[in-house]
Length: 517
Image 1 (cartoon, rainbow, N blue to C red):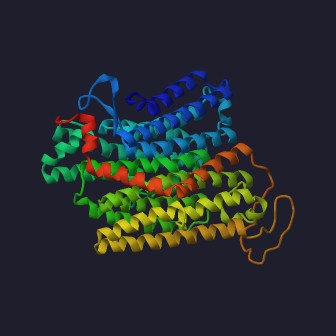
Image 2 (tube, one colour):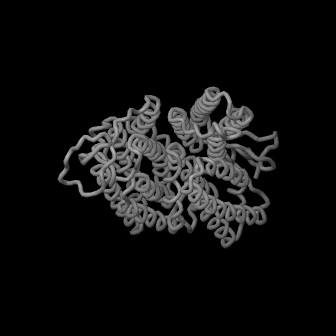
C-alpha cells in the first residue's frame, strides 16, 4: 500500500507529459486521458484514506533514499482526507471544462496547454498535501504556480494578463520568504524532514524558533490569502475562466491553510504565535465579509467571502486544541466543495447571460430554475444555515472556543457569528437582484415590468445549458450536501485526524522509525 502514496503526484505528471507530446491532436483522446488520470488518482486516494484511518500513516521514500536523508511522501488522516476531497473536486471541474470546451482556443496553438497545465496543478496540490519535507513542499508550491499561472492567463486577454502578473508577483514573494525560512531552518537544524524537525526544534533557542515560525507563517499566509496579505485574491481569481477560478478558489488557498495546520500542529504546537493567529483570524473574517457586502459582481462577492471564510479555518488553528484543529479540518473539507461549486454555478450564469454583474441580471429564477437552485443550495451552506455542513463546521469551532475559554476566544466567537450573518446578507442581496427580481427586458424582446428595477437592463437569454455542465455542477453540489448527511462520520474522522496531528508521535514514528531521532 505504501507504493500507492506517490500515485496522485506522479500519475498526473506523466499524463501531462503524454498530452504535451500529443499536442493539439486527438482532442477526445486528450480529454479521456485527463478524466481517466483524475479518476484513478481519486480511487487511489480513497484507498489511502481507508488504509491510514485503519492502520496509521503510510510513508513512501522517493528514490529509495530513506528519511531523513531522502525525501518522503507521508499519507496520514489529514493529508488523505483533504486529498480525497481535492481529487473529487478536480475531477468534477475537469468534466465541467471538457463539456464547456474551454480548450477550444488551443486549436491555433502549437501544442495543447489547458489540460497539461491543469494536471500539473493537480499534481502540485497532491504533492503539497503528501509532502514530508519542507523543500519538497516548496517544489509543490512551484508546481502549483507554473500550472495555475497558465490557467489564470488562458486566452491572453488584457485583464487576465494583468491579474496573472499580480498573482505571480505575490506567489514569487511568498516563495522567496519560504526559501529564506528553509535556509534558516537547515542552518539551525541540519535537516528539512518535517518529522525530524518536530524533534530538533525543541532544542533550539526560542528566538530562532520564533523567527522560523513567523517567516513560514507569512509565506503560507500569502498563499492562503489571509489578512493583511489577501488583497491580491479578489483582483486575480474573477478574471480567469470558470473552471480555473473554481479550482483556484476551492483548492489553492486551502494548500496554504493546510501548510499552516501542519506547521502549527507538528512543528510548533502551542507556541506563542497562537494568540497572533486568533487576532489574524478575526481580522480576516471581518475584512473579507465587509468587502463581500460591498460588491455588485457575483465573482468578486464570492472572492471576498473566500477570504473571509479562510478566517474560520485560521480560527480553529489558533485555538491550539484538538477540537479546534478538528473544526478547522472539517471546515477546510466543507469549504473546498462549497466554494468550488459556487464558482462553477457562476460560470453557468455567465455562459447563459454573458455577465456576472447583479446590476445587469434579473429573473434567473424564472428563466433558469435549475441553475438558481444549484446556486441557492451551496450559498445557504456557505452562509451556515442549519443543518448544513457550513453550520456544523462553525458549531464545532464555536464549541472548541467556548471549551478553551478566555476573552479572546469569546471575541472570536462573536466575530464568527457576525461574519456568518453578513455572509448571509451578501448572499441574500445577490440572490434578490440576480435571481428573484423580475427582469425588465430580455434579449429576445419580451418585456416584464418591475417597479423595483432601477439599474441597467438585465441580460437574460434562453440558451440551453449542456447536460454535462449541469451534471458536473450537480455532482459537486451533491458532494457538498453529502457532508451534511455524513456529518457524524466526517466529524469523527476530523477529530481522529486532529488527535493524530496534535499527538505528533504517530507521524514521527512512521517516518523515522522508533527510537531514531
